[in-house]
Amino acid sequence: MNVDDDALTTNSLAAHVTRNPVAVHAPVTVVGLGLMGQSLAGAFLRDGHPTTVWNRSGAKAEQLVARGATLAPSVEAAVAASPLVVVCVSDYEAVHELLDPAGEVLADRVLVNLTSGTSDQARKTAEWASQRGSTYLDGAIMTIPPDVGSPDALLFYSGPQPAFDLHQSTLNSLGGGTTYLGVDHGLASLYDVALLGIMWSILNGFLHGAALLGTAKVDAATFVRAANKGIVTIAGWTTAYGDQIDAARYPAFDSTIDTHVAAMAHLIHESESLGISAELPRFVKALTDRAVAEGRGGDSYAAMIEQFRRPSADRARPERGDRVDLDSR
Ligand code: NAP
Image (tube, rainbow, N blue to C red; front, side, top):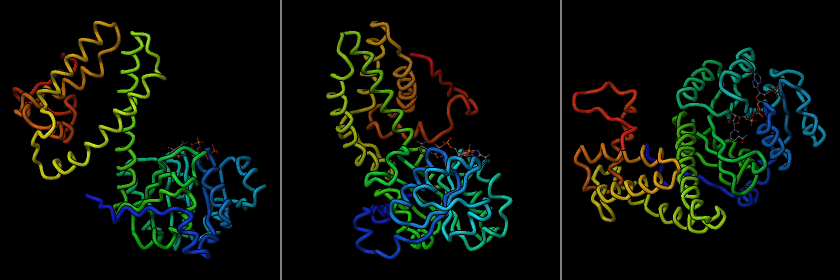
């Protein structure tokens, strides 16, 4: 599903407070006071929301209570206290363990689940919430606890838009990058893992590069300047690649996959001859070799999407002539 720029609703806290000064004091409940839950509750308190909290280990509520939060005596009482209930615990199993017994108290509540999980878990939890008369928004937090509530903090939400619109002013307290993605409850989790994948690809590329340059006694702090410039340059290519992927046409306006493969061979050779790990570029080249074998060598790198759209080679049923050894060079 595409989300166009208009559907990505990002609001700065300052703009919101100016627009809707009454709603900033809407009551909210936070269930789960781990590192993240404490930050969430703290951000609501900072903006003046009457905040009810509950955690399995009650001691974690102490600092929040000192700042004005109300500690509910039970999870049921916490849910009953506010029309908007935010839950953030370790995983979805814990969400269900906590809220399954809450029963009818969940009715007429908007439940916002900021626990990390999969799109399938989000969609199933939406059905579960609906059976209890509750409206469900799934969310994903794309920041660390100390940054919750900052203008740059990015949080994704998916589910029914009326519920998001109703509570957006409260949710805005958690970050200036409060973003509604669409009605499909699975979207927040999918965006979450998609961005995590980008993060690890960039970080691993940086670390591999730092190891390469380390062999020439260039320290990592020096490499950062060139690395960051490269990351920004590459980020500029994704707009055209996105259009190519959606159109399923990959004219090589910049560089062919054949050219990329030749450079990958240099990277592997350099890594091996310098005595550092070549596993990452070997893996990338194995995927790219497969695209070349399928006749994509003259296309742009965006044609590699076809390699990512199918199951992994180690999970796919092998077809004749389609065996791929990801360890090959
Ligand atoms: P955490 O500090 O380990 O806290 C875990 C929370 O889950 C605690 O409140 C814990 O209660 C509760 N919990 C776990 N199992 C439970 C159960 N069976 N029944 C009741 N409560 C249970 O973790 P966190 O950093 O707050 O992370 C919470 C969620 O936010 C995770 O899904 C995480 O992926 C997501 N998240 C975290 C970050 C981050 O940087 N920390 C960033 C983005 C997203 P007790 O205190 O009683 O143990």
